Image (cartoon, rainbow, N blue to C red; front, top):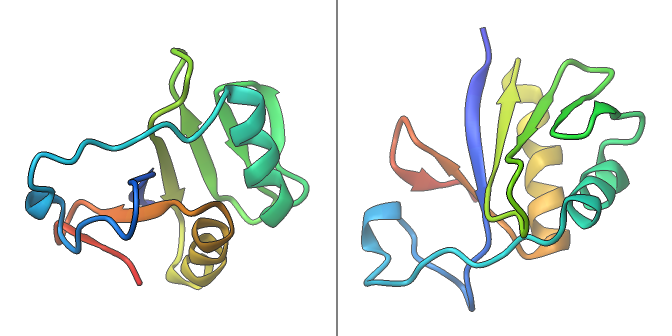
Length: 107
């Protein structure tokens, strides 16, 4: 069973908790192609046969909406081992990873 994490982008450092946004709304991650390219740069071999649903060889899933520009990505993490790679992606792209179960952004 996968644990779902949501990727967002905020101007500046962004909030520490999703509830502490103080009116700040998430920004744009990019176009569909930009988001796919960014994800594939960290998770090579991601299958984008379905442009809005990327699957990595190690079973991570990236679910992207159909409306552009892309404002969020849902990520299915099958194990916690992939969390550090996901955070590397976030650092490289200036994105934030929200764990909705605890209401906090991952560090």
